[in-house]
Length: 166
Image 1 (tube, rainbow, N blue to C red):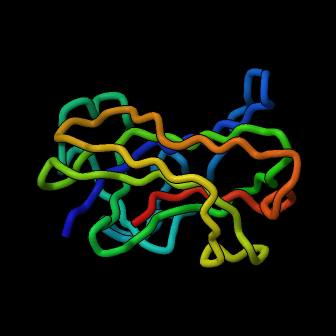
Image 2 (cartoon, rainbow, N blue to C red):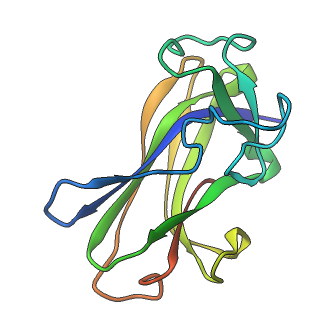
Image 3 (cartoon, rainbow, N blue to C red):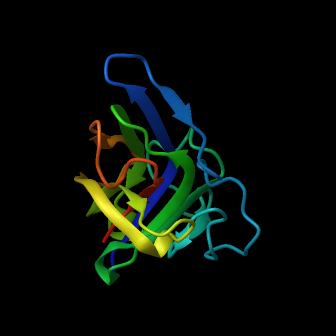
């Protein structure tokens, strides 16, 4: 089982030739937790858990807050969020975070942007873009994934979903 560590997830939105807005993700920094350690990450699902940096210290975690999220890539788990953002035509969406290779310090994390085919249903995720990044033993800010919406398409007007995929 390969567990990937994640922390401080960010979603940015920009018009084709303009500086973008940052969309606030629910518990994007993984600091608000109501479950016990290793329990669910508030605001994220359907898989994943959280732990504290103090108990699982890795290089470069000094500015990342108290907690981090994790999930098991090799078990076909995903951890994502149905955002409040509605996909607009001709906008660029970027989802990125800090990540680390987990307990064995190696791995690959697929960042995904998509939409909910059924309103309010994270499980109805339809992929629009995926970009995978190789991880090592230190925390690193990764570029994540970017998706440029066109003038028309089935995703326009749908709820944006960001997730770390299988």
